[in-house]
Length: 372
Ligand SMILES: [Fe+2]
Image (cartoon, rainbow, N blue to C red; front, side):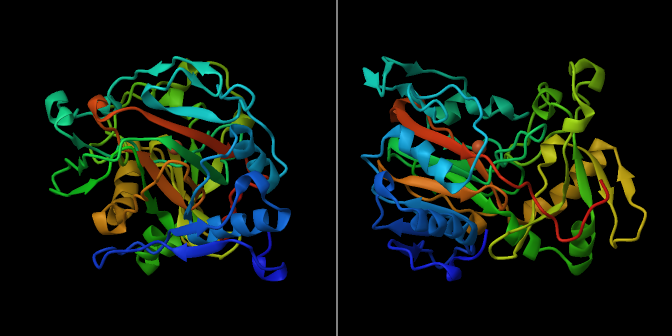
């Protein structure tokens, strides 16, 4: 993908997201004056460039968008391999996400009531239900949308807000001893930038990250199926509950994913420290192209190493939680960011979102080649 400078101007408007004086995040933009039902090829290119450049964009006013168009748009972005998800009738690659009653007829889905367990059952130290009911919540699980086995991760994820409660605010607690918390409207998605994370690293850490790589477990989510996460949503608690590889069923060693620690943004050239720690099984650490890598297989050591780097950016001032009105679509660069859901009590009201991931035509590329 080449930068947009080589093609004619976009017809839509891009405005950086408003920041408060405390905010230190350096990404996020609002896209307006665009109708995704009728978008031309040039604007699709500009939109893709805008996602890579601004990392998280909110496309305003797409209330009339047909679900199939959310998918078609992604079809436009790239010539992609379609993958299976349970979805909206007629647009099966668009997934319905939400909670509560979805209406008598939601694009052909009749009288659906989405009930699910408290999302915080993922945390090793669970948030007590009575505190949750009062509006206290947590970041569920920081992640990128990535199978990390077989297929490469999607470049972008798009999430259209159909309906959500806007009040009262929830109080997000870290519950990790830091005492940190932040208040926000319910039903939104939080982001941290792994580019900012990279920029916060020391020169020695950057040199190490630039030359190192990560091997993910086969069927990684099955591998961690019995594991629990930290209260701040970042990383796993090490309890030795990872499944033995022989208990993961059949897997093809060719499908095991090995990626550079650092992923380079194809449009801006920025580097992101993009390590999905919860699925990492082995690290190969070196600080130059010629050094013999040190192989780290001890999960406690892997997680300690990652936590030191990744938690630096897990502060309210670096977290962006863009507000969404009904009809807005948030789109983000999955190769640059981590995101997480933030649950809220059922009594706040139902939530309906349509999510679609855009498969990639090219996997992540590191700053230097890795010998795998
Ligand atoms: Fe996700």
